[in-house]
Length: 124
Image 1 (spheres, rainbow, N blue to C red):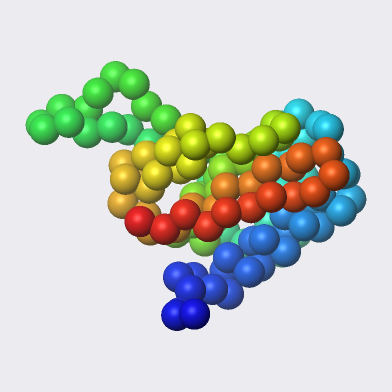
Image 2: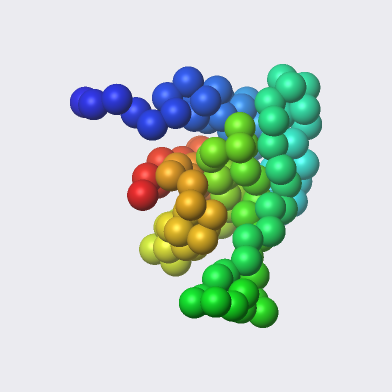
């Protein structure tokens, strides 16, 4: 296995996700997990932006539609949270699009399922 992109930062981030899931379990709305993750980020003094707005540039214009990533952590990792029964390809595509328009390289997609935390690293 080669070097992981942002290994220490993503390890710390995934640890937060597990802490939140261990404390709350599954079944809450996504916003509850977002609030809990934000609490942990603040507590650990980890830099982040919540609901980070990304504009889509096309040629010499900015398109009227824009996206909001749940978090950008450490200024370089997109964190997208879900609370659904299963992750779908569309969730991964959403993260890839965030990476494309932000020019960032790593996204962590996390799903707080009822009995477990599922997380994926997405690198472009």
